[in-house]
Image (tube, rainbow, N blue to C red; front, side, top):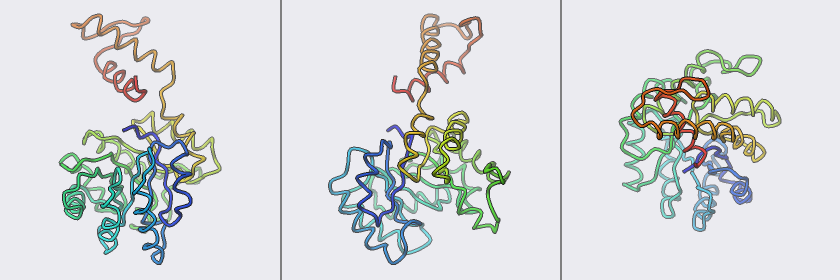
Length: 278
């Protein structure tokens, strides 16, 4: 499943579901957590359950409520009869949280996408995701709940960049995902109108090793898709590297266009071609 862009839509706004599915996003995340007020949870569950009876072609992920309350079981009871493509678990705290969710799903083989940095304890559990046996869609992180959890005034500098604690959290999520062998998904960019800022942020994410990003508005989807899609030049270069090693199967290092390439370049090239669908 390609996951360049994952678009959030509130569960209590069913009139937006079809528009989200037609936005060009690789997946949509119907949110039963933060974007739905407590008095609208029941309405949201009913809307999601009805939508999943005739789901769109685009994969539907449902963000349930955290495990530390009573809402998760109600969320799952609503969506499991017509299972979504995945379940997003907020405030996840490593393998033990995934195991707890799996027990609540009673063995249903639904992949999980944890938001794995929303509590202080969660940071110390990032390495445990590689022990998880439940299928994971990837790992993603957030820069909003964690500052609130620890009493920080903000996660960002005046120019919008992250302060050092949250840069660390972002990096740990990236490495935890790759250690677990699952996609690393970049967090949202909250400034909806700043298209240039979004493009730069998404490009930085791809440069660093993220394979996709979450979006909070349909207008962000095309920018994110473009940022996480390899360019024609990158695809051509990657294919040339693969071709060079296939022509010289015993070589550990080669020259290509006057530059040395070795096995790490081959690994990168194959990964890029896979992302491009080649």
